[in-house]
Amino acid sequence: MASEATDGLADLLEREAITAYIGFDPTASSLHVGSLLTVMGLARLQRFGHHPIAIVGGGTGMIGDPSGKSQERKLLSREQLDENVAGIRKQLERFLDFDAGPNPARIVNNADWLAGFNLLEFLRDTGKYFTVNYMLQKESVSRRLESEDGISYTEFSYLLLQARDFLELFDRFGCTLQMGGSDQWGNITAGIDLIRRLRSKKAHGLVWPLMTTASGGKFGKTESGTIWLDPERTSPFQLYQFWLNTEDRDVVSYLKLFTFLDQGAIAELEAVTRSAPEKREAQRVLAREVTTLVHGASEFEKAIRGSEQLFSKNAFALPVDELLASLADAPSSDVTMQLIAEKPLVQWLVDTKLASSRSDATRLILGGGISVNDVVVKDPKRRLTADDVWEKVLIVLGKGRRQKHVLKVQP
Image (cartoon, rainbow, N blue to C red):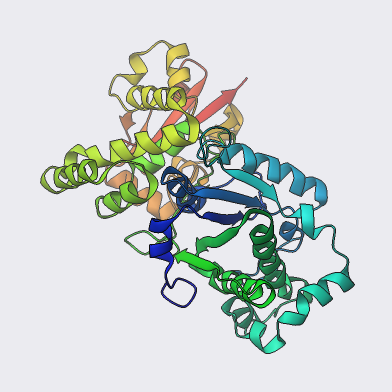
């Protein structure tokens, strides 16, 4: 996005090592794949010799960013925020080097300074430099004013808090660049204006478009929900499968955005995707690189072993303990035999999100796209029975070759 805020930034980045920051909103104890583009922005800067700062917003998190939101967020307690900040900090450590080298990364919590302000000090030292007219022009505010719910004074003040963050990082660490998604542009330019007014210095902003898939869908959302970086929320197996299922028209851009592969390697994968898309070589490399970045090489190896076993034609020839191990990371539900008998298969497909509706489930069955324990189902009136419970332990529902859901039968 070109403007006065980006003017001269490219030359500055080439000429000297600068300090840059990105803020992470602690509304949950984990980042999700939609946050990865932002994380990779900081990681790339560090690899090119710049000084990255990650703000985990324990202070601003108590208010909530209205950017991109149609309704006000639910306010979190200080205990919830502390837990969320700790979870995000742990995940960032997989991408940023906080210890070695001439440009170690920093993680800071803006509660360190925002929590120390009293209202009168903040209004005098920060609020007086912003007119209401200026704030109303920001998209994050104007969009909410047009909505039925409007915007509270609490969220209206968020822009001032983030502007203060930029000023504090400028004073403490010489930070002159803030980055983020395009929905943060108004907040970023507010900080640039505050630095210019109070310090008579130039600062910069850099934003990128919010991610969508080539089909126009929301990136990082699947039928089963958000894809998280926390292995307790989204297993390494599920994360691996998410990237493995990337569409051909998205995979090259994802390789550029979410991996550290060089241009030559990506160009080779792009050529293979064009000439032999059925090999899905680019998707396999993408899934390997991102899963390894997020969870480490050992978890990637477990994910790929589970994938190979789970999707092989001989999976049910394995001993039951090995089959269970290969299914450990697959989506699953605990059920009783009585519950299994109460619902037809089409309803189980809906409940496990393998189908969007009973009519969708019927269509999938008639098209040969559904299996029970790797046996294709042809009857849309099929019901699950005790005979379907493999070794009295589980039933594996399948959609195509790639999607599975395990019903774990409780005694």
